[in-house]
Length: 361
Ligand SMILES: Nc1ncnc2c1ncn2[C@@H]1O[C@H](COP(=O)(O)OP(=O)(O)OP(=O)(O)O)[C@@H](O)[C@H]1O
Image (cartoon, rainbow, N blue to C red; front, side):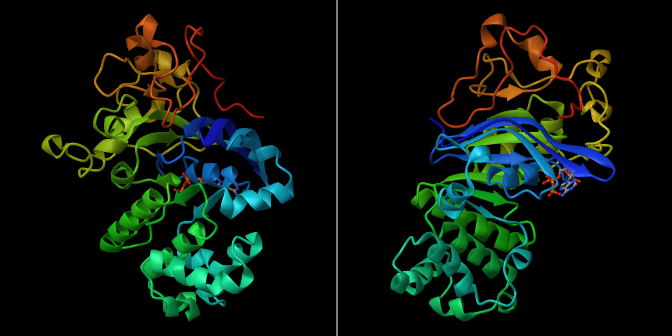
């Protein structure tokens, strides 16, 4: 059983201007100890998914679907149980540590807070535990007495990671953990996260707009566009041989990812992501797609298994009518490789998988 299982997650923000359907039926699974990267341009719904996983969304958000953490649905948990699950079952490293840390409290106090809250070690051992955590993230123990403004951006992000690990969670959600950092520090923080989740056998959901960051750290990738996962599969296959035109364009925007021998020239993707409140009919990527066809205005494809004849396609799926065309009848079952991370696919009996575009709920 996957440690995290997300099924048909839908999140809509209620605003004075109307409903904003930010996440429109996302599903994926994450096995214990595996690492899934969630990629996509700004505004595609990545952070909304991350916040929904621990019910940290603002009151203006309506949520539907199922989020099973070790078999328990986060969306129907009582508050007491939810408090126990936050930090200990799953924790989040947010983007921009300066905004996430309390500016007027010493970082040692902030790391100690979840430990005290959960009673994970006896009270008199909390300072020692804080010291151990600082050591794990490469900071000297005396830094416990520092205020956030006395630390560099990279050091603050290390503090955030120490906090995230404080209650020994089984899942860490890292939302753009290196976005605000320079390239050298980014690499250090990514290596640190990689090492720590490996050493502690923690599952990780890493979120980034940068495929090169994700492909270096994750076993599998899920690419989001306009509130949906449009492609999911083993990281190397998605980066080097994407089947959804958006995933391919995102991959080609980063020349350092994939096979160094076959680097492609980066080129920008024309146009902007659609306004979630005003999606085009059919496939939401249609207005920007280089291989768009007439039928794409009428069909809103769901994830479908990628042709299993091609190398590296095990457990891959993409939401494009061209994938459905190339699928042989025997390929239309659920993808293989479900032991690491999988994305829900359409009912195999459906001849042409479609969804109501921009559905409200
Ligand atoms: N509190 C909110 N109220 C209304 N709309 C929101 C709210 N938060 C996010 N949105 C909208 O939901 C959509 C998804 O936003 P989200 O922040 O999840 O995307 P993202 O992919 O994480 O982007 P970024 O990488 O820039 O953080 C966007 O259109 C955004 O404007």
